[in-house]
Image (cartoon, rainbow, N blue to C red; front, side, top):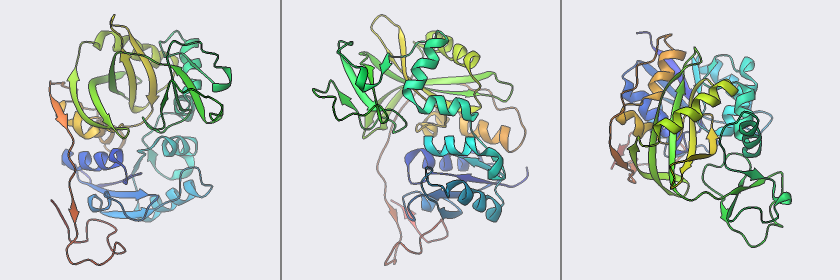
Length: 326
């Protein structure tokens, strides 16, 4: 198998770090280059080379990624953040290599929760009712105010007393759903077929999964929603559907992320290896392995990356700096 080079963005976060660790676990001969907006983070020790980049919204972002692609001879870019994925999808032809991302039109819809609601409504796909803050007049028994784009599960306000501080450009109001929260990772292959999916019930801390378990009781309803989503728009590769299972069993989605999501390293151990599928399709032209979902639970722990005899972070760019994990 030929050695390839992959650029993983956002290695300062748990999503990017999980992608790098899962790439290593495949055993494929892949050299991993990482990038991040900060020069040093917990992800540096995982990668073979590192580059600092501006935020995705910055005018110089795409040019910086393209320069890294040329310098490091990158074969594939895997974005780990919503904004980077959208920007790279829009400017795919300027990057200089393959980008693991859905089309810009799909990524743009699902970056924006209000656009997502309208898109799903047009196509008869369930989604939590969503409106701009300026239109909220107490229509919902309970509501939740969220950032309109990205941000994962951060910046949430449940049943706020005052809506004056929430602009339509930055926030949306959703009908608050009560029930069991599930997160579903799904993979769409290059033939535009649903390759498979896995659903987890999870607990969150600071917007990140802290513990989870594999569940299958909502699979039929989730599959129906995913099938409708694939008819309504084009997806490529891995994406994530977040939903509430109500007491009557109805599944109500409230967010979609068009990227590899944060539980990628966990679900790889439960038979759904979407990072591996990405490498198989985008790097090696192979059909991805069939998923084999198995039951399991997982909990995340905090570990330390130790760099002995160092006096600053300046020379700790990648895994060439002596270190160990404790």
